[in-house]
Amino acid sequence: MTVLLVHGDREYLRDPGEELQTDLGVLDVPEDVESGDTLETHLGEPFEVRELRGPDLFNHFERTGAPMMPRDVGLVVGHTGVAHGDRVLDAGTGTGVLSAFLARAGADVTTFERDPEFAEVARENMVLADVADSVDVRAGDVLDRLDDLGGFDVLTLDTADADEVVARAPDLLVRGGFVAVYSPFVEQTREVVEAAREAGLGEIRTFETIQREMDFDDRGSRPSTAGVGHTGYLTFARR
Image (cartoon, rainbow, N blue to C red; front, top):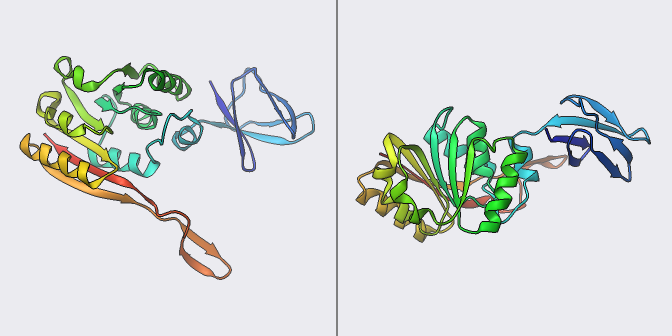
């Protein structure tokens, strides 16, 4: 069980029995370490032990590209109602943040990543997230395997050709199941919406995902000027 060792704004991942060496000293992680423990280096510097949770995975997964932002993950979960026992077909695994979040919510996820090396990194990330038994990471193009797939409660797509998968959604989803598509560009979003309409899906809605943090200081309070807060567009539809 990998744990998070926290000292101020510093965070390190270690397994029980491993050693941490920093300028704050050397720390041996006990085999019986538990979340909530406080460990000290040989110089007396304290580290808090934490269990890995969703935001920690976002920060510490090995990345093969830009991972899905937590706010976008939240919208996917909120608008599809992914829950324990659901079967999810995911395409465009990438780092695997979305797959890990869905599996930790209790879903069984089959996810496709075109790049074999990226797929292997995603498998390692699933081990770190402790969901390797719930996430089947497959290397390949999901479009080549659609004839062999079906019976899913939710489809989550983050690929340039997501509209082609959406066109097959009635064959892939159970009745009442949802599609969630992330698109970085408006043009792709429009293609997804048109494909959903032509496929006879209902409850089609698209949202721009944007979020601004707030700054509070002695001068006053206002939205942060760091970053635009925009990530992309999420389209939802239902069979």
